[in-house]
Image (tube, rainbow over all chains, first blue to last red; front, top):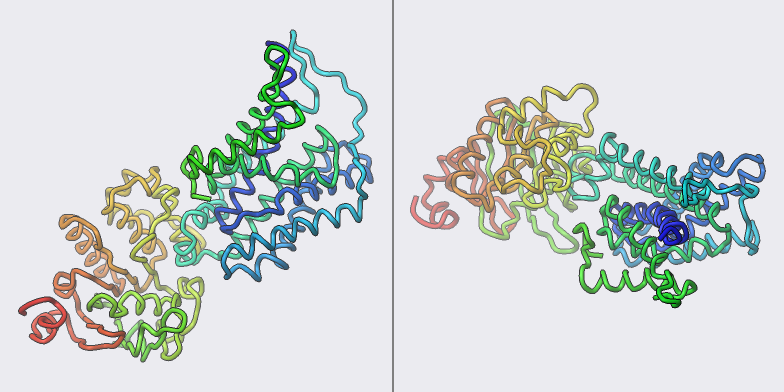
Length: 294
Length: 237
C-alpha cells in the first residue's frame, strides 16, 4: 500500500498537475479561438528551454527562472499568433489547425537548432527525500504540486475577478455577443495566449525538473493533454484540471503490477491516455463536465 | 426634432446575395419604432446592418448626426447604441451579474447606478444575480439580454424579436418594460413578430417586404390601414 502511494500515486499526481497545466490552456484556446492547437506541446518544450537557459546562464534555482520563462513563452505565443493564426482567423478552423501542425514542427526544429538534440537536465544536486513515517516525498514533487496549485488558484482568481478574465469567459460562451457588447475580441485573444503560455512555461519547467529537458518532451504530451481537455469538457478550464489529474493518475496506476504483471507495461503507459481519449470521443464527447463537442 | 438614428437606402446582405434592397428609416429620441413584415423581409438583417453586423453595398447610417456606415460594433457601442440579438443573447455560463457587467464592459468608472436601474426594472434578476444566466427561464433570460444592453445607458436600444418564444404572460411583461425603458428617455427600435401588439405601442412603424420599405407611419395609422392589415397583419383591420 505504502509502495502504491510512494511509487505510483504521488508520481501520478505530479504528472497529472503537468498535464492539467497544459490542458487548461488547450481548453481556453479552444473555447476562445475555436481551434485545436496542435503546437501546444511544442510551446511547452519552448517554455522548458527558456527556463533552462535562464537557470543555467544566471545560475539560479530552476523555480526562479519561471517568471522569465513565462514572459518569453508568452511573447513567443503572441508572435506566433500574429504571424500564423491571426491571418487565418476569418477562415474555417481547419486552416488554423493545420497551421498549428506546421508551427509545432517549426518550434521543435528551432529548439533543436538552438539547444541541440541531446537531453538536458536542471542541475539541482541530489536531494534527500522528505520522509514522513513510511511516506517518501521527493522535494521536487512537493514544490511542483504546490506551485501548480498556486498557479491554478491565480488563474481562477483571474477568470472570476478581473475584467479581462470575465471577458475571456464571455467570449468563450458567446463570441458574437461579446463583440456586440463592445468587447475588443483581439485583446481577449492576446490574454488567452498569455495565460496559455504562462501555464505551459510552468508545465515545461516542472516536467524538466521531474525528468529531462528534450526537444520531444512537449510533443509527447500532446496526446495526454488533449485527453485531459476532452475528459474535462472542451472549453471548461476547471474540467481540464480534473481531466489532467485523472489522465496522470490513470497512466501511473495502470502500470501497478498485480500478481507480478502490470495491466499495462510501463513503456506503453501513454496508450492509457489514448484509450481515454477514444473512449470519451465515442461515448461522451462533451466530457465529464458537459463542455462543447470537440 | 432631429432623428438620432437614420438609415438611408441600405442595400446589402450576406455574401453575394442582397437581403436589403433599399431600406430607409429614422428614429427620434422619444420613439418606440417597430419594424414588422413577413418572414424573409429582411427585418433582422436591417437591424444588424444598423449595428455594423452586415456588409452594406450602398446606403448610409447615421447615429446622433455622425456617419457610422461600415463601423464595427465595438466602435458603435461607445456612441450610445445597444443591440439585443434574437438568439444567443446571454452568456449562459456567466452569472446574471457578470452578464450585466459585460454589458458595461466599455464603460469606465462607477456603474453601480446602472446595476440598480436594471435590477429595479427587472426585479426577478436581482434575486438570481449569482446564478448562471443559462439556468434561468426563457422570460428571465430575455430580461438578462435586455438588461445587458441597458448597462451601457444607451441613447437607443435595438431589439431583435424580444418576445419570440415567450408565453403570453412574459410577452406582456417584456412589452411593459420596453415602454418603461422608453419613458426613461431611451429610444427603442425593435423587430417584432407580434406585429399587432407591437404596433399598438409604436410611435413609428415600418412595414418591410422583400428587403424594401413598403409602408410607414405611426403604429395606429398602420394598424388602421386596410391594405397593411390584409397583406401583412393577417386579416382585417
